[in-house]
Image 1 (spheres, one colour):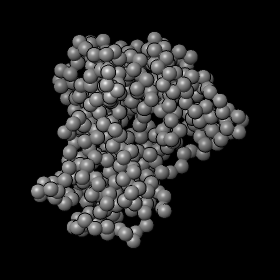
Image 2 (tube, rainbow, N blue to C red):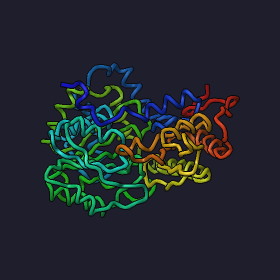
Image 3 (cartoon, rainbow, N blue to C red):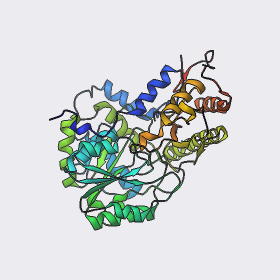
Length: 409
């Protein structure tokens, strides 16, 4: 049997490769979605205390008791969603592990998994690793969900639909009507909803509605979220899953063999933040990101990109048609070549849009992040203003200081 059987049909992470490209060209890294500013003090102090208190060994495989209880309190307080921390909450190594553990546990070979396109780059490969077939439905920035096309994507083989709201990279926040339509289809076809809600508190328009709270969905929804984006700790790898007990039992078995458990002292820090940060923190988080969104969106439009301000999350998917030099035989650059050119000649690194589409899609698009300090975003805006003046493949920035995620070197 070929050792590559389960990886046939998907590519290595382009996003992490673009971070390496940014370092190579001393460019501002607006590719990978990690903040370059500090996490809340409460979070850091609680984690440091846990280390000093020698909480350094394995936590319970499915998560420290205190964190699972804090997650349960959070969902009841915010959404009225009651979950048993003993039987319905699992702590994972980030939302990324939560998604693959869920699909490996609940999806069978030959099943179909519906994925909205553009998509976070892991969703299709996760379905393939579970020996399922991803079925794609378009959900573009600023566009409503085509409910007829979604209904046509469901079939007797549909096991699950992955719902990401707020969405990476489209920035869509699904409306109550859209989520209700998804819920009705899941009930009609006896399918699961697997939700990625990692950006639930980074939202500029609409409301966040966990689909698990809609009629008929509590028993067929796997809700995934985590600390990475809300608390600016993408390297801590603390995520969680809220799901009915029977689904949780299967997920925990896979999770145990994938990673054993998430970092013990960091779980204590996240538990303290969930309990200790009040509504003003979350309001301030959304307001902070709104300012960053507006700054970058204005800069991109002024530079000639065509893009919509996202409703949520911290990404802007932008069309670069008409920008950049011609490629071979005078043809426009594709998304990968344009991303390399922009990194080298302008000093700003995005992600090629094709990373978020099936083969052949997204070739005129790139994605930028705005989870950076205003200083970094302002410098990126300054460099982008000079985009039209870059006429030849020379390094016009040789004498400029390098800026990568807020660090000068």
